[in-house]
Length: 252
Ligand SMILES: [Zn+2]
Image (tube, rainbow, N blue to C red):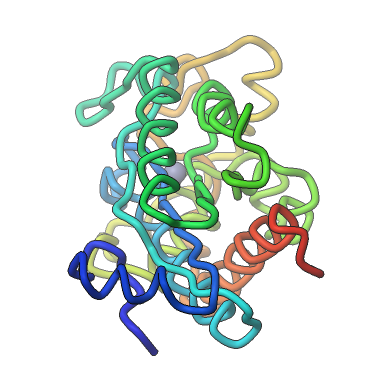
């Protein structure tokens, strides 16, 4: 497989790729820098997005007719829910939209045919800030995010319950994608926290602390497995492929 990380290309090797027959699509992993329980690193969301992008590149390679590259990530987001925890670094929504849009425009200006923002930080204000980039750039920029109902449906029971911050869902993916970022002895003794973030947000409770998540996780991290993580990464990759092909008018 050809080099799939955009930033590892030289300007000359990228030029060659852009001048080739296949359109080039850039996937940007998007996440946050925020607490993910006592057992996962602050970069969890962007690592999940990157894992989905790596797998998506493999699927694109099989399905053609385009070349997918993974562009440098956007690792900071709107993380007001995590207020009060060390490592929660929130940026204003408008700043995030403007920055992400400028990055997309830069990639498009250099000859990239399409940019997909692959987002796995699911705070509603962050999701909205990323989706706002698409306005005026339809067909050239898309968003792949599991909050979109047709993809949410393909994910695990815990994900659908909304009790899924650093729980079984995210911890499984991290065990498969970046086990060095999981404190396994810690996560295996964590008690389940059955607090649904989507339900709490719907009730107007906006921070992890107000929701009762003193340890910044919800769900059941002790139940996580590598096998489930691999399956979920595959589903997220299919989401990326689906969004890009739909945006480009290719059969999905
Ligand atoms: Zn997360």
